[in-house]
Length: 383
Image (cartoon, rainbow, N blue to C red; front, side, top):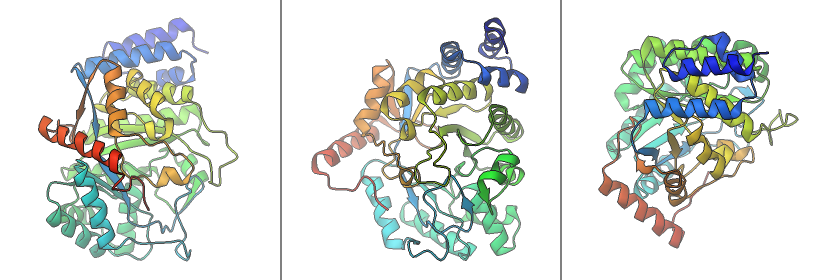
């Protein structure tokens, strides 16, 4: 067991921009020095982001299908291909959801689904082309690595061919979904029929080589060990050294309700903040870290800004996957902005590239969201 002095020595290295090793990362994540970890992570965040503001964005999760050929013990959202509860959204429904998002000041759509066993690549490229033509100012942040890998198998195409066609059709950026824990022992235990570690990373590698950007994620607090959390972070850090294509990292605790792993206890806010802080200290080459208020709620989501996060994430007009597991934290835009401002920062809206939205557009979004709150004219969560 590392002593407090040992831990402080490692923290001082990170604060001084000296990369910590995997062995040191294990010592940090195995420690109980939450206050010290938080202080160090906050110092690193201030060094990387000395600006007077903290950011958020406005987007919407559109789950175009819940039909999935994989079986994931941690997922309450998916339905088997033969399930009567399975769906594929029609175009008009997708148009409506995007238009509602634009009306609220949104500039991005996060579009993910299950690993549908029969939809061919032209279904996806036609959809992207259609949406890019109709909504040219909206970034299409779509299709996680497991989905992309599934496309290669169904269409018998190389990864580079699939990603090139999606990019040409309008794919703007790649979400880091389906990462869970990037350790094959864990992945084989909690899922069947889904991409393993090296192939998940290779989807991101090729996308970055094509000039694309994306996010990295970690869902923790199920069957992984603390050492495997660090192994996950190490694999992300290595790929970022190689490509530089990750703009942001998001971690959250596994939500066990209504899943096949419901016997596992939900992880605490302490565990979330502890792992978040270690992530900030370890991922010295990923510039942005988002708060996961969707799983943690307003106050812990706000505290994340003091434990390594520099971004409050999305207003998230719609979210279905986590909600299916029974987590129902939803915030208004004023609550997100208030959480940032209460800590003494200016609240600024940004896009997927972490560029600030012009202040006049930001103000229009604020007013639109306040009008929604008054009239309840648009749905906040829908499937």
